[in-house]
Image 1 (cartoon, rainbow, N blue to C red):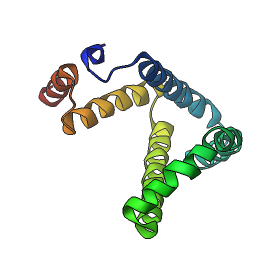
Image 2 (image 1 turned 45 degrees about the vertical axis):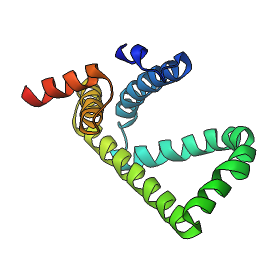
Image 3 (image 1 turned 120 degrees about the horizontal axis):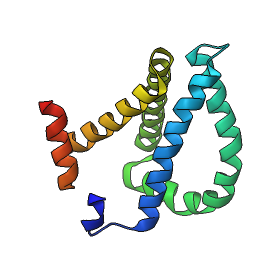
Length: 146
């Protein structure tokens, strides 16, 4: 709730962030339940493919025209096609590797432990990035001194 004092705060963004946090918690729980007959790598692969098939069509319909008209053209004009494609590739690669490591970790720990680790990781990232919220800075100091 420390974000309420930020000038750029809006309820829509806050609500979406909370939905995202809750979704990731449930994802961890269901990942763990789905790992009964498969290892974590296969579960991650299947869930990624299902998510792609489920979310890609609506995303293309909703965001596609705007993305092509403004997003891609502006980005390519600003940094060039090669850098744009290279950055897009590396962002996707690191995002995939991060999620793969998180899924492999989940195979070895309880979902609650995994969720607590994700919260601490988020605080660490905000603190390391010099988070603008005083609450985040205090949490970062608390975590590092504990």
